[in-house]
Image (cartoon, rainbow, N blue to C red):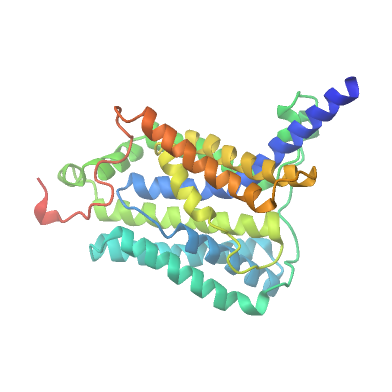
Length: 317
């Protein structure tokens, strides 16, 4: 009996560890989307930006052998994609949805082209782990966190930092003002365009980092289309999290847990076809979004009020 209990505990622990790992790229991408949308700019280019982050990391890591340089290249390249999206939407007042979709198509195609010479070539190394053996003695939670990689811990820090930034600082107050009422923010002397450019670029860099993590933690070599729709899931998680970084953490780990659960069910030799198990996280995400939408139908959504609306200074009121 005791052996069975230990087996169940080990299964649950391994599932939670896998949930954190699988949820981390979604969390990073969702955090990037939250920052962008808090400033009033929708970025539907997440999928393409993640792919560009992954391919730039792979190419640079293979060429230089330096993980730091590879991550820097991914951040720089995806920052440029953020600049492009911000230029189209903030300066030229282009439709944000169309621009985001264009960024996704551009990133998907360019990453496939750039990644061909590196396809199948393994990167020189993995992300270093932050081993904290003193945590092993803590039941369940300790085993989940004692041997996670540095990017997981960085994501925890980012969640806390962004939560404090948005809700506890004057910069966060200005950011929310720009997203809710850019005309009022402009009257108050807040540089609306600068805020939007800044947070769209930072958001794109986080999305690129999500792609880098996907490569380094799961694949170890470039595979065309390796995000498999995770960018779109990250966009859905922003709504599920109601534009809140802490809620985004739990939402990302929920999806990561479902993804990991489907894989483990396959290992148990279930007769359920693998295609259905791979669909499970996406179906559950849709159902959860429907449920959350129904439960909160009579309450404010938390969405920035000026989200998706170009700001024309001469039209402020």
